[in-house]
Length: 273
Image 1 (cartoon, helix red, strand yellow):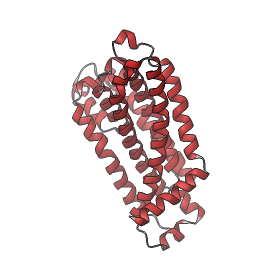
Image 2 (image 1 turned 90 degrees about the vertical axis):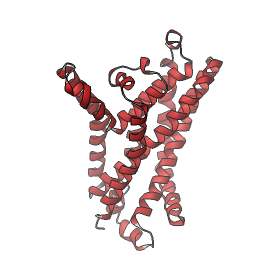
Image 3 (image 1 turned 45 degrees about the vertical axis):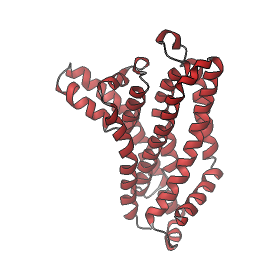
Image 4 (image 1 turned 90 degrees about the horizontal axis):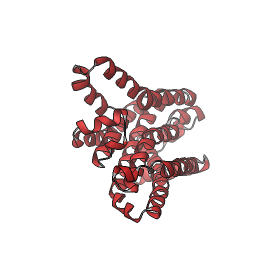
């Protein structure tokens, strides 16, 4: 455990020098401020408190922003060490490869948590300041915070795996951006196109719900929308939340970080320094 903590502290210092802490916090705060200003406007018509409506908007923000920040922090975790020639030196220390990844995961996840608390905290303060009854939505905000942390840990693990598979940091960055576009942006569009083409057939009734659950970003969105009963504020894929059991999306959210870290550890073992 001491070796993992030492690696995490070293990685945190690197992230601080590279301004990743500042970048992540600024991104979350700025986008949360924008959404808290415009996303809670329809709260009166929907009969929900202002913070719950803001949480629904923040869920849509986190689906895009949290995976992107996580991948940008993790894409050079291994490839960067190889390119700088520091990986052979690092492996001479009495520390296992999974302990190196564990330390990096703790440091990067901590940065994400700081950014999430800052962004969501600002949005909550604005909501409560404008409507004292908004404190009723604190439970939804807490649920969004810990599920966002798990979503970030998932994409950190995926980023480590991509970094281990690439020999250069530039290649790992390209793979990370391509994966983000595929899983977070194009995946939903492809599913919606397939649903429209299917016209209520087998794909829509049987394959579509499963396809949503196997994508960590969609599982995260479905769980938060279903648990907060905010499906009325969402459209598109979010409208499917009402037809999928809550425990199914929760199970996907809990399993993905373990699976991603397992894939990263397996890929890192094959890296030849």
